[in-house]
Amino acid sequence: MSVARNVFLFSFIAQGVFVAECRSHANPPFMLAAGISSSTEQCLVSDGLSVALGSCANAVLAGDGGDLWSFANGQLVSAASSKCLSLRDGDATEGGSVSMLDCDVASKAAGSQWEVLGSGQLKVGMPGELCLSQSGLAPGEVNLATHAAVSASSTADLVAHAASSAVDDNEASFWASRLGDVSEPVTFTIDFGAEAKLASASISWEFPAQAFAISVSGDGLHYVEVYATDSNVLKRTVVPLGGHSASKMKITMYRPHAVHGRFDGHGLYGISSLAVFSAGMNPVVAECAKAAKSADARDKYFQINAGEFNPLAAKALAGELPALDAAQASVAATVSELAEALPKLAACKSKSFQNYAGAGKQMSTAKLARLGRIGGGRQREIVNKAAVGLLIAEARSTIMAARALLV
Image (cartoon, rainbow, N blue to C red):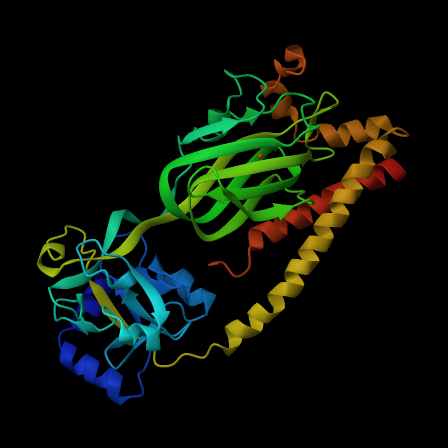
């Protein structure tokens, strides 16, 4: 246990005083740092709908109060949403899960009263001895896609560029669709094996799709679209999935990038690496005595007083995000249109275009040496600075290519 956690533990020596102070000082907010062993400090964080362990530092930077709590009439209230932590459907059994409910609704149901024990455990006020704990192997995000079962509706080479090459943890390998097989949508499907809450997906494209969509399914039969774009210009696309529960995910590619999605004059799609992230642990209740014997202190939560919470700064930033999103979409659409025009401009100055199209593609050309012979042969970050930077870099590259063709 780290020095910081020892300090937190000291603050819990007089639990009765802590609870009394919370109630007598207009419910001052506090963070609940988890005692679980981790490379970074983990806190109990709520997004208003659910609750999970998350990085304390990232939660503070978000500034929306998702990491802050207070006690009110025995209920544990989130500063972000003013909702209360409660057993889901009043499930007071070993392994029962928790969720966030309107406090008035929660107060009428069982499982919304919490008591802080001297051991650092949070005991739910119901018959029996149940405390808040965590299920899972380790805190932080896990990549559900690694070595998962995958399939594609089009594959250039079932050995060299199979669908599994996108999830094999090897950046040197990649899945590729058949050359020129882009008149109909191409799908890439991943089966996680069990239902999980999906936080985000990261797609590293070998041959990017300019227009694609992501859908998720709980039963593998009925899919719900959660993301779509027709102006992707990046080689790496990060997509927030909003905590949707799903056992399968499908990427449907409708149009390849006009420049980067081509090889030997043919359109195609390619994914070198696909990652789908989910929380490594989920909050549950467990028998207090049994949970106390855990080797990684997953049942301990230590108070860090926050003093006060002012959400105005975070709200002001959040208010600017629609404008940023609109600007990004506008730049992406313009760069897409310009990229589509480049092949036409290249008819006048083919050499300049070939230099642009070939830049950065030498590795891909080497990897796809066999494809030519085959013959027909994919919040809690408020601002994704990396994505903005990549978009600006791609815009500059495309504009410079256009200038080279027009000079």
